[in-house]
Image 1: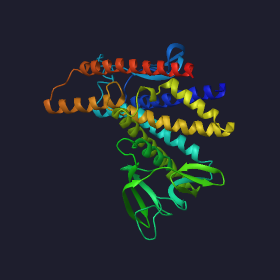
Image 2: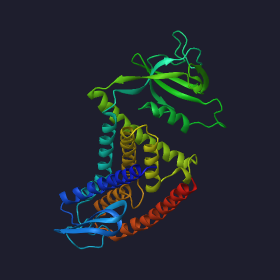
Image 3: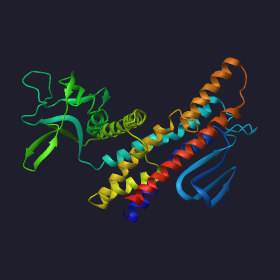
Image 4: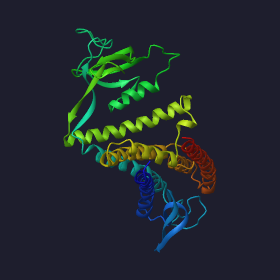
Length: 365
């Protein structure tokens, strides 16, 4: 890991956190909610400046940041506190952070794809001779040149990389030793379903020697502005789906604590990605791609209905508004604050555990 890649990884990750908090900040300011402090990074203060009602600061630990609004936990009687704002304003302020991450993810993916001359598509270009997956004649029970892979086991295939990910996520040698999967293909404008279709890698021989492959290769399309926009959008959708698949693997037991990473692990993965690049230029592009992935992940994860996260607080806001609308009575906002406070303690403890694991793995490696 080079100093450049480490510093760039920390800077990029910190920038994504800053963008998230900036979303909360801009939304709060636009709705007249008082912001007491807007900070980049965490820990002891290195620099600060009071401008109006808001203290702007930069702190020592280059991870995270925060936008501290007046009365977030219901402990303020100020008419400009967060809890005093209308429920729909609070909701928009909460989701503004994740939305900013999703938008920045799109921008980073666009910057990654823009210099490329061609884009790989999940469209079959060549079916290797003798491949067991090849269709024979007009038989639909197989794969043909020109087929676009739409779904595997019910999961959409936006990018070709999704194909391998979904197959891996749904592989179970004990329950499915033949590695059979359900495929949906687009062929000549018509959707073709291949039920219980065998998708095992086999050994193929070519001029480069023997290698394990599924038996087909995919094509590409030339870069145009519409193609760039589609590729960018599909990359974002692919990463959203990857988050859900990863969460499913986590809850099903296919993935565990060892497969999870916090800020330290993420920066390490960024630097490893940079180190594997053939030049500084490609290292920069790969870091942009990784940054897009992390940004989309931050946006989606923060929308999960977990106390202390933006998604959990959004659900709390909606439930509170519904109860108050039905009962015509104002609920004490401190109770919601207690729930999210407890959630924050659990979340911080969990993040500390992940960070300890990441640091241990770095020194172990």
